Image (cartoon, rainbow, N blue to C red; front, side, top):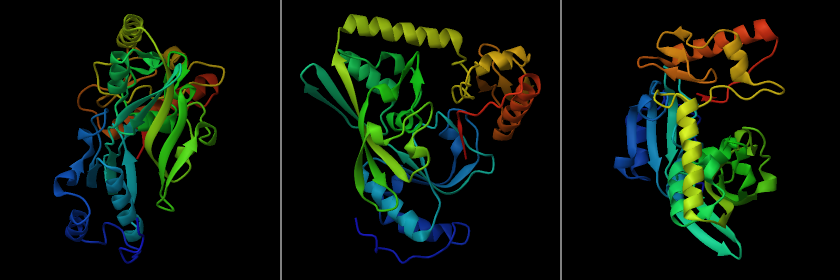
Length: 319
């Protein structure tokens, strides 16, 4: 990928004519993959948020490279998203380009007793779980209900029921936004920790993740998956739009328990509510704005600090 295709200009989307940008983008990616002034409420699990100047779906690595190059050269802000399941977008929307990574390749390699599963960043976690079950591959069952993509799970080191994706990761194929080169990062290079990774601080775009798994029995896999999925439905407010657990687990305390002990279950601001089923979740009762959710997050943090003297942190990403 050459980096001299476009002349560098220090401009923003607001200063550039959107029609000019659209004409440029149509030269590098097909028009049906580009949306202008796209409501982000369509692309986040919270179902809130203003419009993105440009919303682009990339289904190949080359498309990711081309859009990234264009945004870099034109100095246009570029935001990478997956399934939008851990994301809160402001009501004012997003200035720049939102690039949805839809790389959906899955490949399986057998190495003795171990199985290597390679999944594109856009593969949904549940889709991979179902494919692995069909092939009688075990080790992924705890993560099956995570409502995001493999890229998003790798980015935030997602986990559930005592297992994190870092327990399975071998390596990750990434695109370096500074150099434009594709690199392979081993697990040890990714600084994976609780809901954190090198990807939150470094200019990498996740393209594909390789996981180490094992052969299993389909009946046992199915039983375990159903147990975890049923538990999730029983304990979490999956019937309402949300971004999963709103707050991180604390050091030495359970955040949801502190919120509950503040008497905040069911507390509502506008259309946003602290779930009556699970105090760690903020849900959209149907007509919430992103401001409602942000105000409820701030109020919850304030009340927990006043009562217990601890700062709780968001697990969700906010744009």
